[in-house]
Amino acid sequence: MQEIMLKSKIHMAKVTDKSINYMGSIGIDTELLEKAGMKPYELVLVADVNNGQRFVTYIIPEEKGSKKIVINGAAARLVEQGDRVIIMAFGMYDSNEYKGPKVIIMNEKNEIVEIKQEGV
Image (cartoon, rainbow, N blue to C red; front, side, top):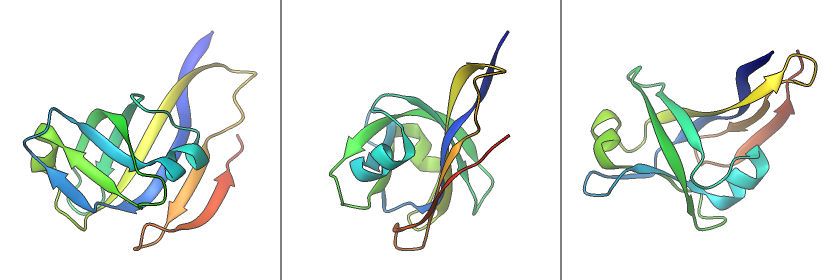
């Protein structure tokens, strides 16, 4: 039986910008996407640590090395620039193939502090 499990997570990234007048999505530095194993246009769940809001959107790539985390469209009403967010991607796995999520831990400058492969 396949189950939906956490594939990867960017933990405590800082929102660098937001744009309500955009068709939707979250822009993420391409370098972070590569390190986290996330892909452009992948579905993600975003949790705002500052206010508790959660929303589902999809990823668009931002310039590699830019350290940008940009919330676009209607979701931009749920966050403020400077808020810390957790960005989670999920996958479908057979119980015996799931090895746990890859976790990218960020600091307040959107620099990677640690990369962990959590086991189950």
